[in-house]
Length: 255
Length: 255
Image (tube, rainbow over all chains, first blue to last red; front, side, top):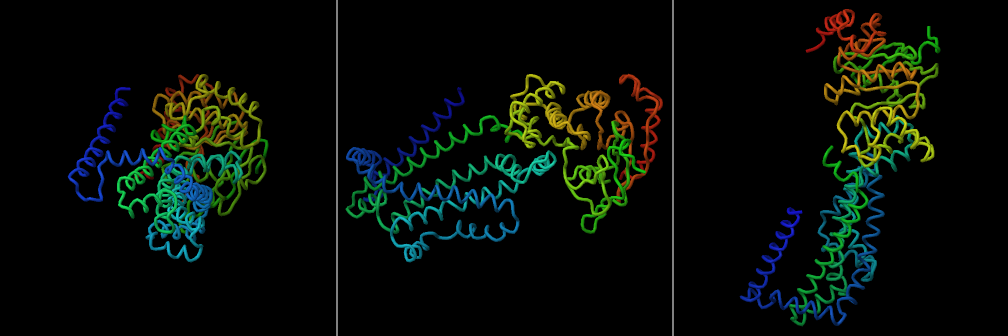
């Protein structure tokens, strides 16, 4: 309990230091385009009150949710296949390694040429950001299932399907989930990048528009809102994970 | 030569090659029904390989294994396996782990849990049904592995160095319990070990294997002390003689 108290206190300290530095830097000011922390807070409040933020997120969340959903389903499926089949691993893994390291911003014009400036392109950007880490994590986790557990499944007459569903997937689950969390964070980046680089809609529109009229506090407020939302979402995901893993959580550290 | 009523398992002229490496060469061995046979030998002598061939987990290069007169091609309901590293699913409770063999056979949940509870009690783990493997000691984990193998009611129990990962005191208790099990369960036990004392203590028949390539050097059947009280075996002159004799013949193969 005491340790938890201390952890919270330290987190608070860390936030105070960051925001304090921001406030001081804004007051000097380091650049006329850099507002203070308090100005940004006020702008955040204003955007929240007049509903601009909600309307914007309704737009931004569309490609984000669709993209993350596709990445999760397709990514875990492909990762499972990669983990189970050497040949498929060699065939497909390089694509995702390339995807992970490719400079996405440079690829966006290609996507726009192929799929236009609508939702499809934005979903693509989210997928390119989110999918590789999900695929590669799932593949690695599946491949690293303890050999003796698979042998056990076979020795006790499990079919191939049983072994996959009852041994390999549960065994890989914690790492699949870790990949999912990283994928979702990357997806957030992808969604905003798409709105900045393809067509300014949603939160990307607030950022672009505020910048163009030199309303820097609003611009920073919009950027901060993305970070807050991403952190909240990752927390929810972590709670779901803890709930699903209950008993076995500690065992992974123990074994 | 093979009388199926006498020998539960017969290994006939089995060869196993891993590429260039000859793991087993022309190995033949009979395992009398209702008795415990140890496969004893220095590390690298292929005893675990032989056990896994009998289990149907790995195929022999040539030769055949008969269980109750039928040729082994894959794991079957007539054999159950106890693993050296326990091979318990860390995400599953004790009762689910014990009932897992039955789960894979499609036995309904209430029925298989009733059977599992019976064997959990038999191995002395009553009260731990809903614990997770990481909450148990090494010895208790292997009791779970043993209960899982017993609960599928196979006639042949294959044990791969089952006590090598538990502490010495627990190990002695296990060995005593194993003698009781052999007497009461009317199953055929095939027991891999590298401990001479352990092999002599628990076995009706000891097959001494020699490495590179593996072959049966000698079969020893202790006669005098098998029916004596477990407390007296380790002081029996025949027990001590056999331990000495085996060591004398194995000594030159240990580098």
